[in-house]
Image 1 (cartoon, rainbow, N blue to C red):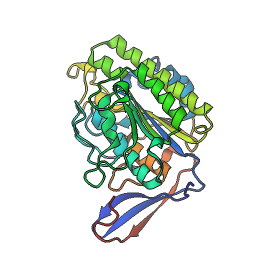
Image 2 (image 1 turned 180 degrees about the vertical axis):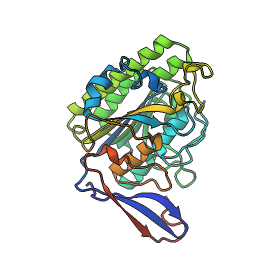
Image 3 (image 1 turned 180 degrees about the horizontal axis):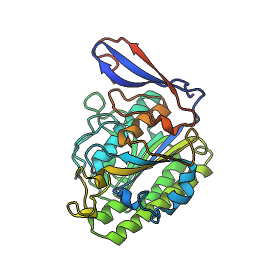
Image 4 (image 1 turned 60 degrees about the horizontal axis):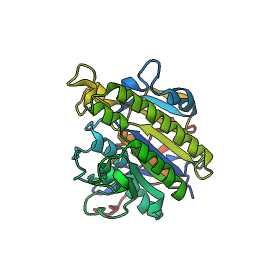
Amino acid sequence: MKTWIQKTTVLVLTLGWFYVVPVWGEPLKTQNVIIFVSDGERYSETWGEPNKQYIPHMAKDLSPLGVVYTHFRNQGPTYTNAGHSAISTGFYQDIENSAGSQLPDHPGLFQRFLKASGISKDLVWVITSKDKLEILVDGGGSAWKGKYRASSNCGIGGKGLKSGYREDSQTFPEIKRILKQYHPRLVLINLRGPDSMGHANNWKGYLAAIRDNDEKEWQLWQFLQSDPFYKDKTAYFITNDHGRHLDGVANGFIDHGDNCEGCRHIFLFAAGPDFKKNTVVDRQREQIDIAATSASLLGFSIPGSKGKLMSELFVVAPSKKVEKKKVLAGAGKP
């Protein structure tokens, strides 16, 4: 059952918790959250390209159905594991990136949702082309490690860490199969094509991969609208983990990982039953705000995160009030 009031903890002190409480004027319609990460797309080739020629479905079909952010950013380390970790945990972290040998310091949305809801792990999934992103199902130190692990299908054969990267053309059928078979309520998806083509110094391949992901994003939206479980009940986020170097910075589109505008400035689109339609937002937002907003939609909080609820998304924005609840030192921890 959806609650009318959902609490998001923004500050923890030794003597108490301070809550910012979004108060919804009516029950939320959203029951599911799907986050689609198109890996390594530079904003200048997506919404920042004047003719939107590489994202025709986003420009013509999807954007009228939701909200486009023109100033969305990765404000942490600009590489794959760090970007995905920020989106899924609500915290920025300088995390190992080559092999998936380091877990996030904080539990992700998946662990928090499983704990808060008590639902089966079959209803929470991480589905990625890159095997190393299996790290997203675990984390949070000793209080969380190994607990409330989501289901995963990452890398070659869906076998996870050390299985290797698989082609997006193999990942996408798995996404559709899992959504049809299990009807998960919270899903993170990664398709690697643009990033892999960039690192291969294949400009034409990079642009083709952006267009291919645009097609898959549209196909997934159509699937969600055709399935009664998801239709009119699902928030759908499309974003990037990082961009790429600007032309003239280092080796240009081939790589990423610094503070240049090309690496930091990325894209966000959001559609759902509680969100506005045909809206462009110029307000700056960042990756950790996806985590905060997703948590609020699903009825749990992320203590200590600096991520903010993107209230401008909503047709009816929540009002806010601050509550303080005194607890014993150490209480309220996971």
